[in-house]
Length: 375
Length: 161
Image (cartoon, rainbow over all chains, first blue to last red; front, side, top):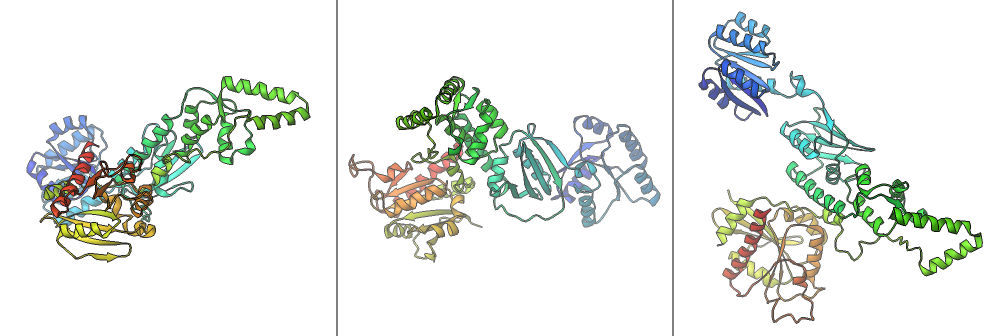
């Protein structure tokens, strides 16, 4: 939606614009004559200005005052029947277009539509958008790209992770992040609170791979966010440093867990781990909780005890070491449980909850009408 | 133009299909693979599409109702008697519960919370934790009454959100 100020002495002219331009993505505001307009510019800067005034001298006077303000906002001049010289003067004064009134409605709309196009001569809007994810949430970004009916690819970067969301005239049509299914990819990327984004404009018609509309996708993201927060909330002692247990046999651990557990080798708090390694997947906070519960990750005091235990074993002779190990295993002294099927028997894992088809009913009025009809 | 509300009904016996036909005063059931459909013109503004599913066909539920269920205000599970824990309707419910998040309610014919169920016997319907509505009188008016109650409860909970 482009904001347009109509500078004119007559409200009648503003009303005419409102009627003739209805349905175009422009929002018109009548600000009155130039005196009032100057005050209005202090409050708000529109995307476009329409100057509509019958008296030619007065128009040039207004334009001169407008130029002195150095706002650099594109403007269009509207005139009554006027000769070519008069128009040329206004073009020289920097008008994006000079339109003589009356004009055919269709022609008028086409001219305005072309001038207002985001990809038009207004370079400010055509430029790629980029910024920091700590300042903008993905949900807000999507909302503003939707409002501007933007077409192109939104690239997201967080640590070593990168993904993209594809928009077609403001509508989310596809997303890519690793091998995740498009909606899941968006849900996960919406949890990235650090990193950068970069929106690359294009004019390509992107194929629709997601059947949900933007609002439904945002709702999904919010749902994911609540579950993600809940999963992080469940982790105990988030600000205490944890270490990988020296008793842990990395051979017994899966490759993904191994990768993550190594981050704790020299100590790391769950909070820092989540900030650095959180991909938005619920698996990561769930696994972290699991590792703490299974004692794969231990606090400093336990870590020290275990280190001395290991050192003692290593100083013993080879035969004793093997014997110790066998006996310890028989006694179950190690207490390291390598099974990760903690969700067996538990109700639903959060991941399962997320894979259910969402509840999308929104026709409240219709439901009310049915209840009334049944009453 | 009519405003259409779609409500899927999962059921374990022809009893409930007959109740719905009596309610709508119609016999124009349209048969599809995996379910039947019935249109009910409630008044000059609202129309209800009932989807009746009386057997578990996972593929068909995904394919044919996968888009309808998320947009329905609720789904109804109907059991003529107190179902056994391994009964057909419980299988349908378990499948449903695993794949959808639209609110579900139960319509049953017998009282499930009083005399009927002895304490040592598990009551699978109540164990689902979903609201249970009992058809105490076998009349279209009463059926309409419990349908309205169920919808009203959903509407109130939507307003609270």
